Length: 333
Image (cartoon, rainbow, N blue to C red; front, side, top):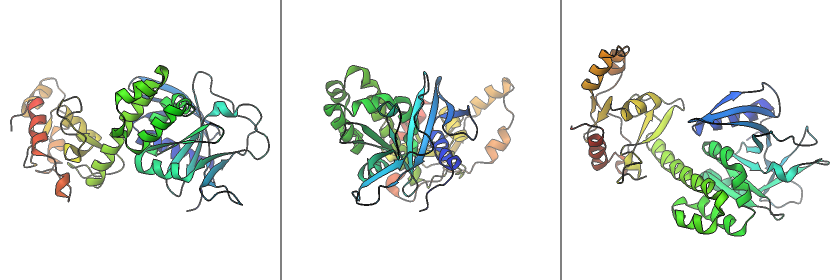
């Protein structure tokens, strides 16, 4: 696959990754490289500067597994004061990023500077969302899938620092292969206190990515209630995560667009164990009394009688999860 030749295209990949990982962004620059953004979510925000190049094979006599970015157009990095500075590579062939620690590359870069990452880390990130690669000089590169981008930006300093500590680097590698193989006690035992929260959040994000990826794949990336795609779909839990009996099994998931996900969580709509959709008329009466009923008829009439279920029976919503979820939301169907 051809490399992207324009910085605007590379930056667009980053912008789409931030959105796909559940964050939003504001543009602080337009058409510039490095680009600057304000990235925000749930009351948290970060000013972020992004340097980005294509990832390609090292070429020549270098190892077949060595990939790299070739830093061009600048002779030094200028870190974002009080913010995040990202040094990124994008591998178009596979659709993953790699990030390097800008603190390891301050000062004059010299002639033809490059930064390396192993192909195995890039491909592992494609499978599980995230993978560290510890270089021979101790620097850690982080490979990550687009839907992990927000977590990487938020915790990049701690993740890069963990890679420089042998025990923590081993735990990160284990985490990247299967987050269920790492528990809170492992993190407390092997990770220094200042970085424990970042590693715990990485574990949580990887587990969520795995769940979401399985659910979205099962439903063909279509909303089970309206059929829309457009990358507006969430892998939603039927029985909420906070419930003691909730799991990350695909059968506890349903693909919903943003509108129907919110309507489901707010008990405006539900579905029963036969997959029939129900409207909460009591809730709609409350909305009517509050003069918030505009659009109800269009909303109601746009929905089918039944949700669309995955072709594989193992992925169908489990009646146990459906019934428990309906009860805690006040439904008795």
